[in-house]
Image 1 (tube, rainbow, N blue to C red):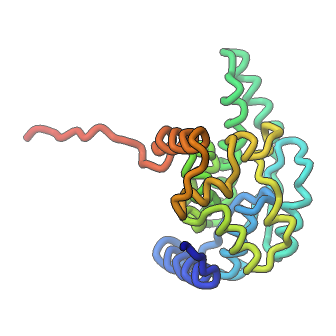
Image 2: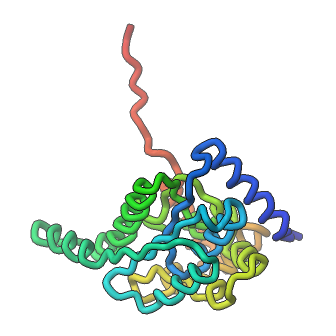
Length: 247
């Protein structure tokens, strides 16, 4: 039976973060988007443990009005990290209008635009202070492609990429994060639905399938397998034509 040693996982992950920065930005700050959800909260807490609070910078990015922004502010206050609030609403609205004036935007294109603008914002902040951008996606999301390509799916390094949702929650509790941030229903903040509503199955079901091979009902298993196969490209490097000049 699979068991998760949370303290060992935290210690190993912190050492990995420290080593990565020693090789790729010694002394640089870690910069990440803060949504107030469990992933960005746990990632920020891990970074504080590994690098020190003074080297972690959060970026809050409401899209005009964000009803739950108080959760993001709570996380920053709880950890004591420097943070900046950059409202992407005007930019998202203006770009949507510019594109829509030229061709009809699909609903999915509209939904994916803010995450891509948020990542551009995080990188602009990071570059301005000489930082490195933390990706906050977890294994469960990545497994079924629940991220926006070139939006929240990217970053310079990814501390949570090999932890399931269940494991991320355990890490958050071990690091002393407020329970409301750990158990907050995950949502993209764009569609008005939770992640699990959009996926059609729970993360608990998905995590049991990933870690323990416990298969859900046939319909859910087929849905998970299809999503996993269809979205593997999101985890791959951009393919390049292998041209070889003749000599």
